[in-house]
Image 1 (cartoon, each protein chain N blue to C red):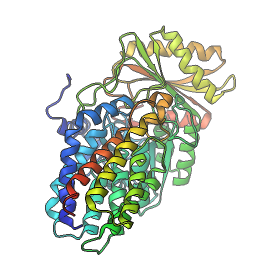
Image 2: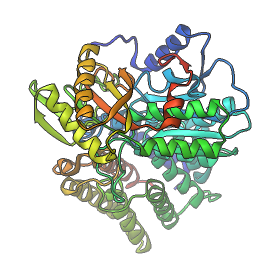
Image 3: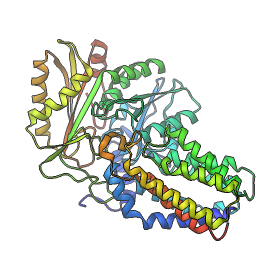
Image 4: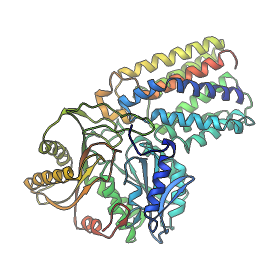
Length: 210
Length: 327
């Protein structure tokens, strides 16, 4: 994986987020406060705008730069969480020109760990971690097993989808939805939907290339 | 969506420009990154900085000035500001006596201010306001929200800071005011985040949302429309149950409108709440009625009560000169 692969993936994430606008927005209006999609879109836009600055950087430096930019752009709860994810990924692959699949899986796990500690949240709390943690575990296992790329991507996409749907039956103990108590039951968590959309977009881009 | 808007992306900048142009002797604004500060930097005092999503005006920018805040960091509508704003506001206002952040307890505000606090290289502390009794406190949740009681913390700590209190004293005072304060609100309508273009939640013409927050997020339960006295009873039952004041106690009663309810109804609420407090043997020694912690154009209101002692009453009475609060 090199920096160009990351930029390609970001482009498809942005397109996928835009394509899912109405669904993500309606989930957030049901149990959030209506700003999630706007914040995520602002994050995508600012990353797209800095593509040129990222090209000469190695993946670690590119992730770090994206994290700092997102921290000062997104705001809300997603700002610190998503930027912590990127900064931890950057630290994990720092100085490696082309991280291999195992190194990338390790970086992804470090990013997820950073979200857990910044948000003081874990599995089962109806947040994006309910998608990210199982996907990260599966990615590490498949990378260890050296699974063929198309299969790895198909499995990750399915895992993200399954776990996103499972947030429907959870009550929230973190974030705005926690104020709703049982009224949040029956609604998919918008953050986990966004993560599923992003993971699917990255997998679609990388299954043939990286 | 009917709003006064040219372009949703420039709304915040235009509104902040207008605020500062309306109060040129009092305020200045920076945009890279965004914060509102006193026109003149104060000398020899703890710098008080607050902030949060926009859409709650006059909170917090309207409370920047002598006797209250040194700076406010406005985020996008209902979206927490970012750490770079807080760092810039701290650098522009600190006088060598440290920085106190006053933060409403919401996940986003908490995390962004916490990152700023970690990154800031000068002595700083944070008061987390969580006065909303509609949300049950538990170690497993984000916990109670910070709502209209935030103004009271900012006013009282602001007075103490102006009088030369240390950072540790300001922090302890802020925590004490927060513990003595409880709020709860009711909404009649939702509100529309300009960038979203439609109401955050749906609510029927005869329904009310009890225990609503200040970001247009739904509250604890939906109920049928009821007389004002019954609404006041519901809110005060929860507030009094939380604060458990002894008879004879002096209290500050704050009736806060969410932006879409006429002042006439807010005064009606104050009357109803005053009768109930009297029946409980409490003395509404201080009052504040108006739209101070709003939720865009949401109709509805919240009641806030702070248990007073002589020190808190005197700090509340101290001179304040801001865009939205002055005496």
